[in-house]
Image (cartoon, rainbow, N blue to C red; front, side, top):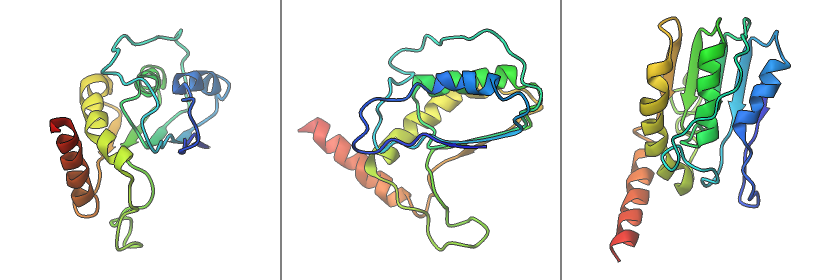
Length: 173
């Protein structure tokens, strides 16, 4: 099942990803979930602004085996959803958290370059990686393969360095 919840430049109300728990509860035979939550700029409250996680009553998901979240960020509601999945998807075999979206240069040799990313997405990436290390990695059962996909060191590194230097210059002015 592919679910796209992208937000663009005209979308100002963030979607509470944690509410997708209801979707999971209503889909007991779901085996694969691909969730695209790409946002051009961070609209959600970051887990680092408020680390008190909400919890839902336990509901065992015995069929869910594979989850991939593209556009993964430090959004608190996204961390809550991921923790819920890790706790309740008893058949989960792999969890992929991709901090960007789109194709990559190393995807089966199909592309010579990765899809370009906006500054907002690239600026959020270090916070997303820190959130994964802090709130998710220690909750991953030994039976689950966690794959964390960072921006490409060839295609995105230059743009990320430029964005970070612009951010530092703006702060020092």
